[in-house]
Image 1 (cartoon, rainbow, N blue to C red):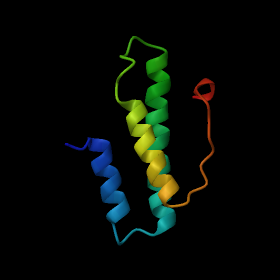
Image 2: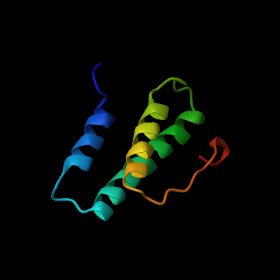
Image 3: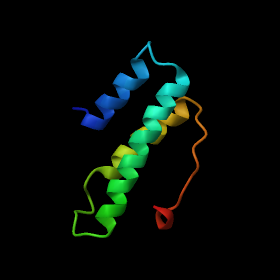
Image 4: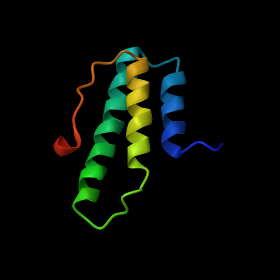
Length: 79
């Protein structure tokens, strides 16, 4: 099964031996923030509901959990 661009980006971050844990978390949090911003914008426009952003957020948050990052959980109403 092919992987998405986001999954590839996350694999690269996670496997980079030159990045410390806190830098990996920082980069993943940036990706998460960007994905959430795009999702917010999509909720206010005519973008497709099935645009893949939910999947991107899911794989980003999975990687953050693997790094034992302190991520706050937000419901859909707080996007």
